[in-house]
Length: 103
Image (cartoon, rainbow, N blue to C red; front, side, top):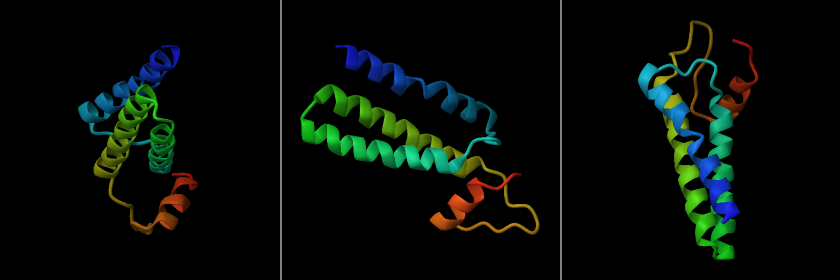
């Protein structure tokens, strides 16, 4: 029961950020790579939860992963176009490199 409560708190802690982005349509300061990696991490945790056969863990990880994917999609949707002199690319290498540059 404790893992379910903890999982629900961690899962639903993402909702205020999603609502703020939907309301403001601003993602400045949010790192796309962070949410991409969190989404991948949740996919791997989901595989682990499925292997354990723990329905509570599967539900919380699936929900949290869906919310992380939602945040990643919102960041991609609302990020400002690249400024003159910078390059935008959909490659993972560019995503990683862009995450470590000061803007």
